[in-house]
Length: 74
Image 1 (cartoon, helix red, strand yellow):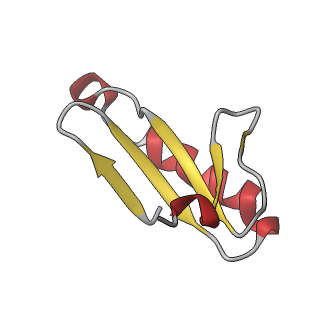
Image 2: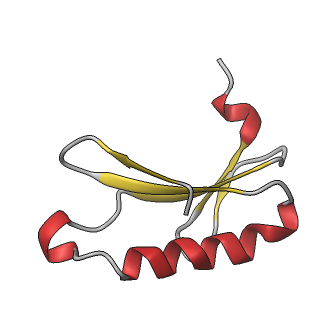
């Protein structure tokens, strides 16, 4: 897990990978991290996202968002 985004009410976790083939491993890492959080205290994640050098973004069957790095550019 590379970053946690928190606005004081909700939170999400982001993992950045350089190869598209690493999406499965990164998604599992995020899900494992989210399971370790005390969701009774802070709530569940608003999102789990893997940032990859892909052309398209999508939501995986497990709910993890795949975000192309180009989507983060201004």
